[in-house]
Length: 177
Image (cartoon, rainbow, N blue to C red; front, top):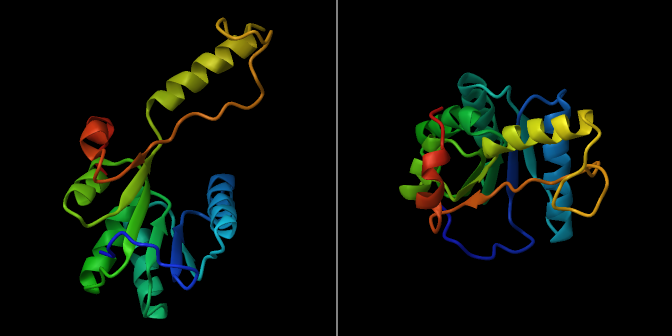
């Protein structure tokens, strides 16, 4: 795995997306592209999978064949990442920083073992918060601790980044892929 360092503007960045026709995938890809542009980077190689182990392995295999040099790989989903990681292992490619999303226990174990740089957690508590906010909206209520008279139209819930420095804290929230 790539040592933690500033790779500069010449870094080769790859994205393994989910299902391209889904707004979720489109939003993630747009956010990734926008964030990279903010620091003078862009996505050099992109493939799409289908959020499954099998499709992740196939997409990652295709990516590795097409890209002889990669510095960073972002994979949209840790379940899909099981196949992505299998493709990396099968090709004996580990020169890049591997980053995922979802917060699976598998990904957290890879982080502990130094086989993955980070994953972004979509905490299970987000669903509970979403349901509670929807209930407040349906009841035409606001948030009791805020001055606003109604629930804000947009609320961004925390999605922590898990690294080797905090993996122990988040491992209990991980799910098995």
